[in-house]
Structure formats: structure tokens, C-alpha cells
Length: 270
Image (cartoon, rainbow, N blue to C red):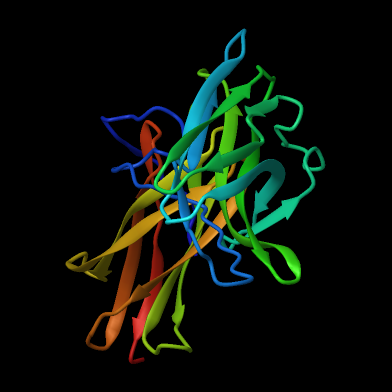
């Protein structure tokens, strides 16, 4: 176990899910394949960060029909939350305490796309006192003998927040445990987003001997964390270490003006 160890950094990033060392398309793309899909579609970007000040702000996302048949698409919003393990829960708009339902507007709510054609959806966010989040689904319709069926849907996460937010976070705990499924070891990191901006964290875990010698560096893939939430991420340590005592030292970049660090002690072959 450990407590958070903030570290200074010189390249502070702007708040938002693109924080960290690189901008990766952390997307929520949900496919519900009820029947074979005649024509697939795609949407970009799948994360919209809309900063508002004293007036509404607007942005757009694009939808492409990549199939050979025309597609009728329904567009609608829901609320969502994210569990500590990374999974998502969806609910009716306006039911989540951080819902954007009262601030979010989009147009159109239906699209008819010809084969290989594209269309834009305009999204408007009204100002608010705190960060909100919702999800806009684009859902295709496929006909079968039994009627209309859902064939595919893609979720676009939408965040509304002000420019004044400062990314804040810390590693709450680090553990190294046995990986019962794959064998070997797992590093388990609990990261707290203590601010009001959505974050994306990533970094490395240094594996050191008791004497401080670095014997391995294991990357931590990017993961998203909602405001005031804890996210648990598990990283496989595929290492062939001789028996002894070691330190696992994660260092995570989440886009703030400091890095989050911690450490855990673990034994191998003892």
C-alpha cells in the first residue's frame, strides 16, 4: 500500500480527457448486434469536451455510412456513470446528479445517410456551475421480418465544464498481487480524480530492487477517470525476477502541473 506522492512536472496540460503524455482516442463505442448488419457506420470524435463561460458553446461530430445501403439513424441522449473497474452504467437523461440533460441540445435527432455519405450532428452546451456529463447515442435501424431491430449504436461522451478547472488527482493505493488467471503478478492501482475536470491518466511502473536498482519499466495504458471518482486499473507484470524483495513505483501523468506517484513492496519466491 502507499499514499499519493505528487511530483512536479514542467509541461502542464489543459484540463480534460486528453491530459497525459499523448492524446489517444479513448472512446466509448458500443455495438449491439441483434441481427447481421447490412451497413456499418462510424462517428468521430467520440469524446466532446465543451468549455462554456457566460454563453452557450457549440461543436459537432460527424457520422459516416460506410456501407452500401442507406441508413436511418436515430440520435438520442442518456446519462452515464463509470464504475471503479472501468465499466459503464446508463440511465434515463436527467437522473444522474451530474447529468448534462438540462444544458445539452443536439440537432438533428434523426439522420438518413446514403451509402458512403456523411452527416454532421451539432451539439450545444449551456453554461453551468459544475462539470456535467452525458452520452449521445447514434443508433442504426435494421428491418427484419419481425419488424425494426437495433443493429448498431455508438456512444459519444459529452462533457460540459468551464475553462477555469485545474486537473487534480492522486494515487490512493498500490498493491502487487498474484494473477490467478494468467500466473505471474498484477499491479493494482487506485487513482482518485480529486478535481472537477474529467481526466485521462497514463504512465509507467518502475520495478526496483531494495537497493534502488531499476530492473524493469512497465507501461500503464491510458485510462479515464470521472470527477470525484476512483478508478482501479490492473497491469500485468510479465517479469522473470529472481527471488527477493522489490518495489513497484508507479508514476502517472494526468495532465496536471504535477505527476502522481506511489510505491508498493512485494516479494518474489519467498
